[in-house]
Image (spheres, rainbow, N blue to C red):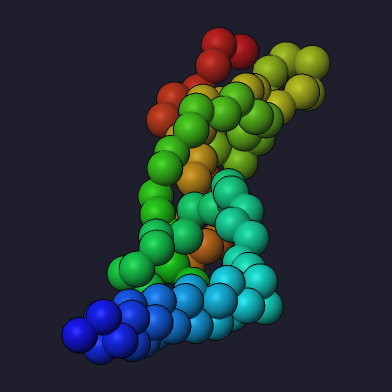
Length: 100
């Protein structure tokens, strides 16, 4: 009776010991480093395609075409809302023109 219990105990220890060692070797071979990336890409929705999310930010920049020039010939500063389209192209929309 004791022999049967000893055999069962050895079998149980052996079956639990080998997979643990195999898992450790597997994990050592395939360690993955996770790196945080500042990206506008929407994870999970694009399924491999690069898609950007519209996150507008206010920018002031010369707007001679939209607002004209002042008396000195310098372009008038415009207030723009800039971000990236779904195609990841930079887009700026004029909100208002500054004073000349």
